[in-house]
Image 1 (tube, rainbow, N blue to C red):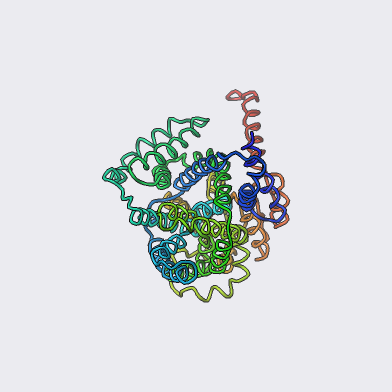
Image 2 (tube, rainbow, N blue to C red):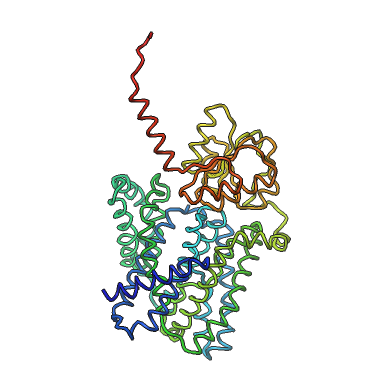
Amino acid sequence: MVFEVFAVGAAFIFGLAVRPLGLPPLVGFLAAGFVINAFGPRFGMPAQTGPILDYLANLGVLLLLFTVGLKLKLRQIGEPQVIGVSLLHFALSVLLFTPLVRLFFTTDWNVALLVGIALAFSSTVLAAKMLDAKREMGSFHGRTAIGILIVQDIIALVVIAVFAGKMPGPWALLVFATPLLRPVLHKLLDWAGHDEVLVLAGMALALVIGGYGFEVIGLKGEIGALVMGLMLSTHPRAGELSNSLWSLKEVFLVGFFLSIGMSGLPDWNAVLFALVLGVLLPLKGILFFFLLLAFKLRARTAFLSALSLTVYSEFGLIVATSIPAAEPFVVPLAIAVSVSFLVAAPINHLAHPLFERFSDRLKPFQRVTRHPDEQPTDLGDADVLIFGMGRTGSAAYEVMAERGLNPIGLDADTYKAAAHAEAGRNVVFADAEDSNFWAGVQLGRIKAAVLAMNDLEAKVIAARTLRAKGFTGPIVSHALHDEHLNLIEEAGADCTYLTMREAGRSLAMNAMEELLPKTAPGE
């Protein structure tokens, strides 16, 4: 029980404490890790606490990367802005950090190079966690950031293999046969049903086949979990599988953030190292921003993607621990990663308001060209606007089209919008939280708007901006929780409905229709 007192108790107390400050719970979990590390041994903390947390952290990372893979499309990793920005940023970051580390913290150029490489990466776990919490994993900037992170992880594996002398053996070539597993994996998911077996299927694929299986053939388990998710991303129930693993993944990831905080207690040199890197952290984001602009992305996409990537990576710790020459920098790197997490988490929480505040200064930097994330200004002859084309938005679209209306669907997921368009629906890519979209879009023919997105902030922004642009038609929205209703209505919505309550009413109406006596023909 001592482990639960220290780990679970500290995580709960500090996670709860940061909420009134408007900070995400992970900031509290990091602080809890430092407190456990500093004071735990004095109060009888068992020695196995660290290894247990490391084990739970590994499970959380594997499940997270598996669910990231479920939401990805393989082709997005090969897009020019993803490959180009990943390679250029890595090279430029190494050129920036290596001389600084050599000048201030070591006399060995090889060690400085290894530390510079470790600092070139960004945290896949933190970025994915923040994007997932804001439901932006499928947005253009979210997909771009995740694609860059995946390429960075592949680079990190190559670095470890080269410097640590752990080159994958011939069995690693089996990775190229993984697409052959797709039909089998899809059939397994079909058989898993909708109950706890589905959760176990996800865990088996992420932890056993992906995690352990890839380690057996000489590759990192993290890549294996991601690949397993990618293999299932085209399955119709990929979203359901991701949702079923959500709570489990979140619990295990608490162990990850605790373990980062428990990596080691700093000395003055480690503190100085972390402070210097904290000052240099904005340069990492600025470099990402301008490289993304160079690949023709708009300022907003470049800013949001860059902000997600402006953090040091836990993979840097893996690089340092895997290569003996860099081991003296493990604790300083852990402190630097923790500091970057503490800075990045609250800033990313305010990403959209920050861009709106500085947009006039940032937009002049974007290239005057056709952007791959361009959004529509002309909505054609549509008379109903539907934001969010998931299951709820798609159902609303079909009903309105059947009733003779002319709806247009908008979705921030480019792949989802393209799939709807290929199916013959009038759906285009657009982000309700993007001021550029609202500045150019023409609403003259629109008579009503439906807010079917899951994210509360997106609904509030859409309703408020529609009213600010002079839209007087009805705005209808669904909500997942009671406390969201007033917020959406205050923003300008006319009608708000609790999704599950309306589903229950629909069931009741159908049941009552079945109970009514049938009228005989001719009566």
